[in-house]
Image 1: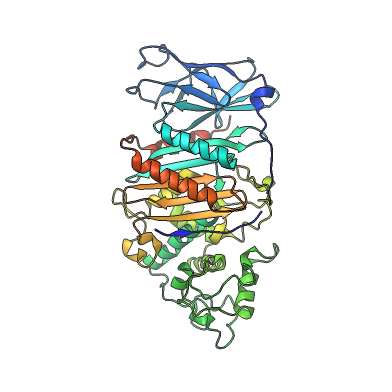
Image 2 (image 1 turned 180 degrees about the horizontal axis):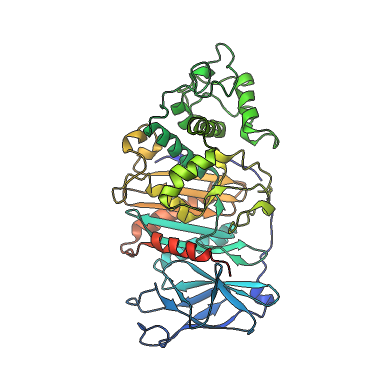
Length: 465
């Protein structure tokens, strides 16, 4: 088993505003009526508890076409799922995936409710709820695949504590160092397409980037660094005296790499010693740009993500004002999550994604024959992608992220909008170990393929009311 981590540092604290206590415009009732749902033999009433709508429907009833009956306290309130207005006893929804109803009052205030139908994994819900309470985690999003099918996809908690907005399966989170597997696969795609070789030098007279950066000092051995060395964190550079990627906000990646080549000596011979390097993955991003003729993000989107049906992943903005549609807010007491140059971090820590996005991504590279992989397994040799079990962590102030290949059958993703700053990997370790244990203990899994359902939901939510 192999673990990789990205250190970050910084955030804010914010009390949870409970809009249910201050706004009297929410739901008063919610049910599924026999008259509106032909498969039902009796009406089903739901319990409304704070931000949850809890109902149990017979196991033989499909959740894919259900019509809800609901009533709001005010006749002038409107109800939405995503951007689609809901009409009581009329609108049909696929309730087999995570659904959040939003009630918007006449003056624009909103209350959100998560619909919970026959949870297929009560033990997981309870375990994650306990961890969220222990570490004061505002929001989690979890996705599990079994033989390349999405079999569990659920969000918990609040995307924004101030507004009371609930997290959902379409919530985007910073994924920090989970950006590195994305970059590795982009490089391996170029290798597979015979555009570069893993043994190619990066700098110096024969290097891929020979015309982009100055020649390294004589006898520095920097000209010996190969593409494979960067992927494996064996460039020979260390973070002494500091990690150059977290230096001055105003410096460009070009300036940082130039300074590194000219003024920071190697601590080790390239290829000899592992030392985790954000800089190395920044350089890989510049290789992708040079070889592909596209921006780093452009190549990844066009050649890796879009063919896999991943449409919402993008490079994060720096500030809360720059956050993307559906992006969560990040919370950290000790430091500000909004003090980073995210565009500069693109290829080592800059992406935002949903848990479902990353679940789609890992099915491209998990060596499970249920779906064709993007990269030939032979190219995974000498990387952690060839291991039976591997996990990669992402960590920044306000961010905890996990991608895990558990075994030949299961993968999972976990994204959260905080971290424990005293021990940045504490939350990740507990979440990772807990979900592994729950997956291995569970004997029966739903057969429904949720990837398709999520796509339907996302396209549905693109409609403007």
